[in-house]
Amino acid sequence: MIADVRTHGSVDDLEVLQRGDDECLVQFRTHLPLLLLAARDSGLPLEMPFEIRDGDATWTLTASQDAISELGDQLSALGIAFTVDYLQQEVGGSEDLLTDRQRAIVRAAIDRGYYDTPASAR
Image 1 (cartoon, rainbow, N blue to C red):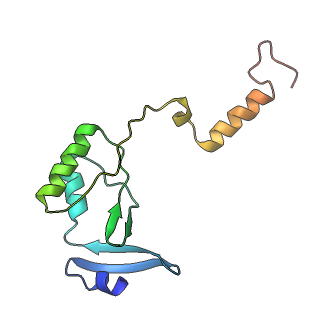
Image 2 (image 1 turned 90 degrees about the vertical axis):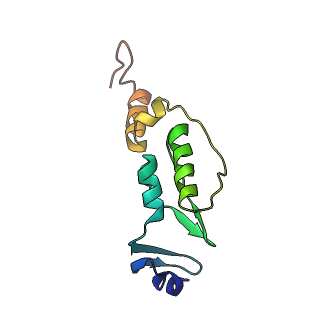
């Protein structure tokens, strides 16, 4: 598969970054970045990495419904076939405001009474 990608007419350079038994991580440069063009023209950032398995790319997006719809229009205009497996609307809560490490520190402070009123003996 790597040889096929490397010799594809639109691929200028390909480097294997990691190789496993049935998968590998590659970085490639192309002069015809169709996904990048479609993402750019729809106003979406191209979120990396995305997975390509058996010729199918799996791409997780965080965007408005309008932007995703525009991406679909752009992909269709470029002749790229696609399916949408699912859409999920999420409203970020306070859990999204902290990293895992920050959340652990706040939890430890709560458990040790740091925010108690009146403050407990520390």
